[in-house]
Image (cartoon, rainbow over all chains, first blue to last red; front, side, top):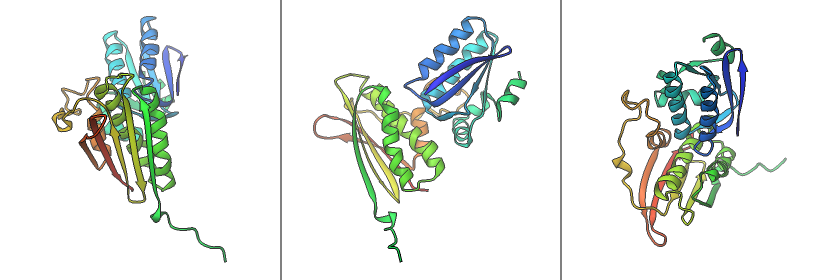
Length: 110
Length: 151
């Protein structure tokens, strides 16, 4: 499991490869916060290569969303498979995040 | 004529895994238990969502909350899988806790921006039953039992 960060124009894109769970959530949080401290404002997390997410992983996404908004930025999500969509719907986190079906649509939505 | 393979209906897989109180082990235990579920044709959603997420929650609760990541305390996971259901017992060495005492609604708009509080909610949403027992004998602790019927 790993996180890859790259820039697409003004947008910081994070690919989550493998699981986003209690054992690695801090790594994701720190990587995104480092970019936020550098002044980045627009963030997209892409779950195309993600397995499962536990409650700690969801908690980190909520926390990052708040911190990015506090700095005047935006966090958007893309490429949730059917099971990840179910997870977001169960927890009603689909109401908190702007979620796109594809990376291109998410990038165009900023 | 080739002999037909025996039906899966007679199969039961029993697993017992013991780990230190370290969250780095969770993913490995989840895979050990997910594998026989896949062999016994649990459906794709159960394999990708219900089993891994609920198991991850139960084991992380045992490590973080019950055992407080104490390196001297262990977590024991016992699983029985057959074509009817998966039963997993997650045993910690912590103080007794009330599983039903934690009733905060994680989906309430007042709670939706909280970072924590979704673990038990997800276990209950993704499993058919979640129960807690006292672990008798030595060491004392809690057993959280997760039950999922095969779909």
